[in-house]
Length: 115
Image (cartoon, rainbow, N blue to C red; front, side, top):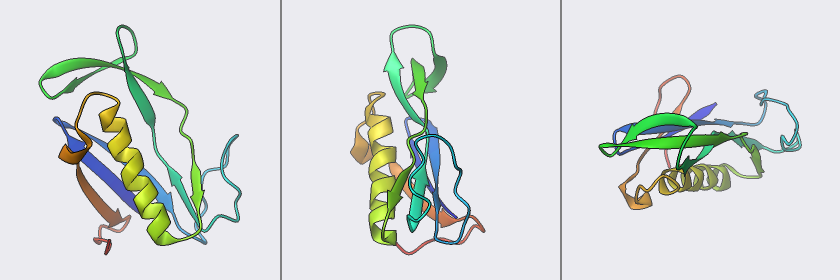
């Protein structure tokens, strides 16, 4: 299991990348279990009212969450790039410049992953 974490604007988002042989969550919309790598992470966007309030970059942001959209990948490189892009996109959806997102990739056991 690999964790991909993005930090920006005083908040963070972490998703999970399941590797071949690990049991990825199974639910409606999950990718074929034959996928070598499965990425699962929250998806959210800013709304004018309602949702969950989060302090981001010194301002209060109302967030609406979508059901996670698991994605399957054939290679580790594809999976890591897809995970990074997903995390950057979520921050962009709440007004954070994707280039300002600090990304960390680590194995569940805490070891850094070569990326």
